[in-house]
Length: 592
Image (cartoon, rainbow, N blue to C red; front, side, top):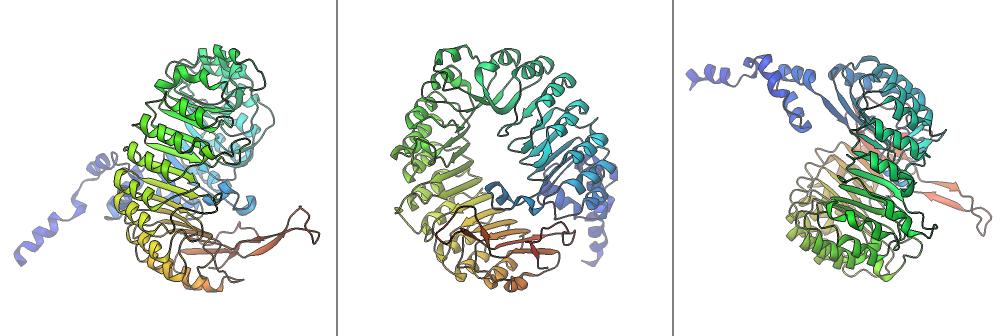
């Protein structure tokens, strides 16, 4: 045996692979998990991975320092950077919490000579940041996404429009932008002739239709436009010029005009595959019927005047849909139509809409009946997110039985119904997780009593491949949390809400048992005034931040004179190579 050891050692040595061969191989590997594994093999592979890595995603901007990115990936071509916790999208994180892009942009501007694409999500970006970035990389920038960002104005957009002449993608969706006028769009139309994707959906930016017409004439490759609210009649000339357009979102019907016939002149481009509209009612829905058969994506989340029957009639004419986003006014009957019509459906989102004027009716409820229809009828489903009024174990079991392709499952149980058919959902969640083995993301936000300690243990036991999880109102005691923590071996990111029975001691012990965990955010638990019980969570490279429970004054008057709001305690713990952050506001208490 000893005679063969030198030969075996030579065969298993990675250093014999020439650099040139590694460059050729690694240049064709883009999956970030594969890349991470490759970089750990040996120093040679680590060095070549650094030199050939083209894209990096930093899931939390405080997990590393900007200078570290530059020293490791100096030839980076694409960067995605996330700032504030996801809870900021639901106004659960104060605006001044942090997530500032300035230090990152300063580093990007000073040393990343190959950068072509930048995606910032939930970050604070100032006009001066934009000026610095464009000054350094504007000539080469091909894609800029400011996704749910804030802090900048249309002055910053003018800087982008006039200097980034190679820009193919400008994405501003759901960002809070200070509007100093619509000149930015005119500048973009006159300076750029290669733009392919323009998105300022869900913003309040005011623009002129003639600038869109100019953009369509100059940018012959424009295939996607999503804009803020704009009357469709004003876009008739634009649609004629944008002959290659495949995605459009943001048009609206002026329901006060009273002349529905005027919209018959609206003709969408022939290649249109994706459509999303604002403000469309029963009288206008027939205008889009001629274009429905070719649609693969339909967004009806903001068509506030459609009722259940309108949804049914419209969806029956869309047999090729792969992505559908609606409000829960669609009801169980509408979901049954979806299951019978849309056999290719891969993505379904049913948002909360029961607060809309005139839509608080019995039809606008999504329950276990509609969910079971979807599970049985849409076998190719990969993503589902639903705000449900009622639910049962049988509905979850149906997904476990028929939806083996699911990769992302999210459900929120609303509090609109006094009684829920079938709680707790222990057996249902077990069947769901056992059957949907491809799940990588899982959100389960219930009501008190929705999941017992036993059910929470099932979640941990059968979540072998899940990397992101959001749980709300689950479990009954610390025992359930400890049962959960025994499993979830691949869990990287965890969010817990409204679990007021979990103690700090149990949270700390549970987090230490999750081997892959890199990020945890908790709101609403049995907190002390100073977070003393969280000390057990302390470990190397972990930052722990605590927002104590407090009392804030509200503007509404109460019987005592001033109303008060008790804020729930929040815990944020995350893995970081950068050490403790210095830009936190006073109400954030860094513990370790």
